[in-house]
Length: 344
Image 1 (cartoon, rainbow, N blue to C red):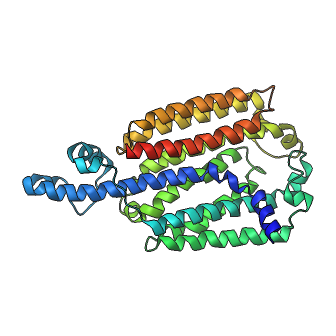
Image 2: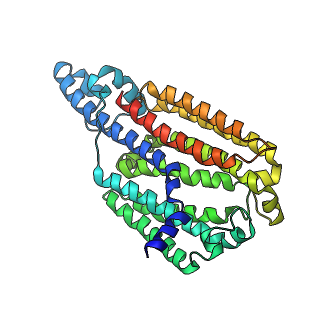
Image 3: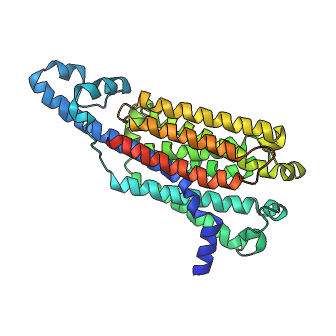
């Protein structure tokens, strides 16, 4: 049993959760910091209202401020600028369980859907299903169990019902990616969208009530999710350059197979440039993030330049280095920098 569990964890590459989990955790920190600021702001307005009743008419203590109001009030109320966090621990546990269960279900289902293709591809022929290390039945059972776990984990967000309502559509979107390369070369962006939704859904899990009353509350995390989408799509395009001939031979769709390696690498670089633009835009709509964010974004830009220098159309031998090592540093590094910029 333990051997089978180990093989399943190897199959879904549980360690690669590093690619998505840090962004969900970053969104969690942003949401918890905002909850703390709103709490401090309400207390600050009440305290300030004793001295100047005009403040009460300008900002109501019974509602959360808009982003425009928050940017102004960050400078007016010292309590708001302090690194105060509100930690809804049950919901945070729900985010972690949903991330692990959702990714596990998607990876297991992907291995099931691609098992015949993987058996034909020399690069993937040694995976667990083509070699018979794991049976189709055991992987299917694991995928089903993880799917149920994903939906069940959303119950931890109650009375916030949005995660529960969104759980099945989100799960279908995750699983649907496995068939996308059979009919569209934009499969890279489907994968990017799947990972880009992680921070958005984490935010909804913590702030679903605020999102219902004010959908604009999602703006900062939608920008973060867009950055994640472009980042993932870019490195997935790079990764797909390894299978250009195989994809063409077997009628699979990818941007490198359609356009060639050089144009694909150029598009990947463009995606990563777009990612940087979106990361730079986050402080414009989220005024609680500190100056350290800018240095973190600059460091990520350097890492992405290094990633693209590792790979060129005539030498794809270092794709795995670019894919695994550099991108793991990007995701974990942005989480660390984001957390520090919220504290400073």
